[in-house]
Image 1 (tube, rainbow, N blue to C red):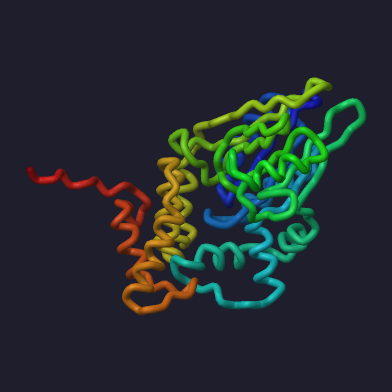
Image 2 (image 1 turned 45 degrees about the horizontal axis):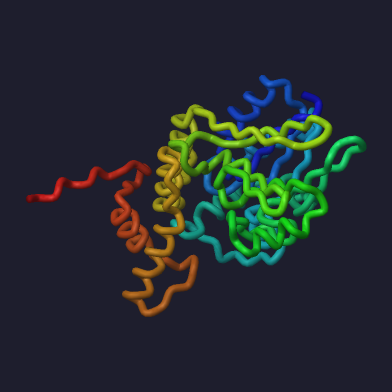
Length: 300
């Protein structure tokens, strides 16, 4: 137990799922945690997620690095860009930004984007969000960039998140371990996901967890927090992913941009009018509550 680590990634503000994962890990007697970034954005009340992180950090042995969403928020704060606005394109980001405190931004600023665990008598492991050099890099199995990253590892194991796909990829004896996403999980019917890294003194073995949790609570908060009004289509497609485990965020976003470009001749994120988002949602059979629109029976 002393050598076991709970590995959490891509919480995206889903504090309900996060709490369920913490409870499960603590029930197993785990006191070591690795947090791989993308703590907030997409779900309501980011302060609830941050509070849980601060508790873990204070009372347990916790290793934390930042994700691309934390960098996104920091860059926005530091450049004072001010181009996020209410609406489906950037409203969710603006909502998160406005609900964070100076303490949160200082915390993000203090985080590295890569870490290595090394203790005498144990093999080491490395951890990052996207890749060791880029929080936004996607490490998909079999891809050339993934093989390159693995071949340059100092240890035999890399913990990484970002692409929300739970699983292990082995290349030349080096392992890439993705715990899956806690907050916007893909597949497994939308069950929240993380992994436990078991250390036996000679090697690390990963155990993948998928948990049911109280989705009704987080889905209810989308409405009461006002997030559905601030970013209607983005909230809907996020709620749909939470309900189903099927992620259509990029599909809907790219379709809305394409529709805008076709009609206006130009498109520049985040200036995508809501009407294009509404069409893109409908084409993907999602309503504004994030539920599936039943497909009409085709007439024979």
